[in-house]
Image 1 (cartoon, rainbow, N blue to C red):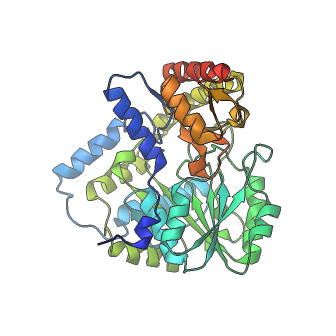
Image 2: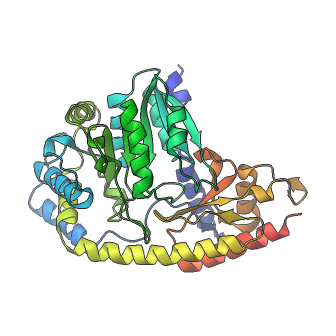
Image 3: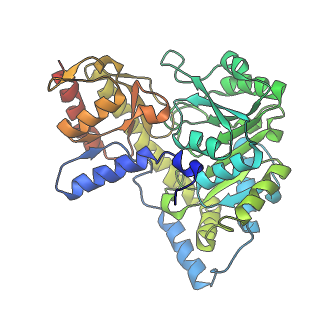
Length: 397
């Protein structure tokens, strides 16, 4: 018996594969420095952990409504009004089992077979898979260092056709770390409104910005009616393993997303929901976030300076998330042990083999001239890893 054609066409997550390989090599005793992590290297704050214990002690172990407890959905709605100035009713909020399920629900709710979905590159590698699983067609919009890895209104206008259903918009961006300014988002929003297409706005890294403001697409003009905000607890509160995502959407879309979820996972873990409610409503979260952002900002400045001092490499300075896209095209055509480096895949393979440094191949993000480095690791690892990277690029012939 064969598996379905749909399953055959799904690519596994390269970021998870790289992280797993690096861990396996470390378990073998190899001193591997991994820049593949897609999660904060901070533990979940104690007050959130205590909230989960409280929920267990109080017997909060039963099913909840499919889209989440009313208390949590109200807390999310309050958070959105407070942070981006947009009002949502609890009925417009759907709590899901992680950010990926939120995005999957959104795609399933709006995409019909043959619909075109615009996707700026570099993109998070899961986006094209979600589009295809929903029967949509991926339309990639390329960006460059010159455009600071961002799309322009003119580019968006030119990409829209009668078949265009949605734009997937990530701000701040994984994998680039780029943050769109309010003026840039306003200009893009005008194009979207003129054509009446949806925006699936992934805002999971909204709180991880460094010296620049975060703006939501839903805040501009009438974009609330066209925007599906997808976010979650994983990055802001270092709750990756808790698997809590959420969306805010037009009511008809939210109802569709809830219906879809009712036949897949049903409700998100009840304990994690209560812990998330406390995370959003307890003032101690602000202090935790303030410290985490300060640490990430210092690492960001360190890794950018070290990348730029390494031979043959360059990067655009990221202003959000905890990633930097490194342009490695300067190494193409160079030789390592007599073998030519032709692309980012060759670069990553040789870097891991020769220098024990794990980076994520940019080809997985639609950016074959780049590799992604995560600075969700210690400053010591950043220094040690980039020292090895610099020695590696310097050794190429």
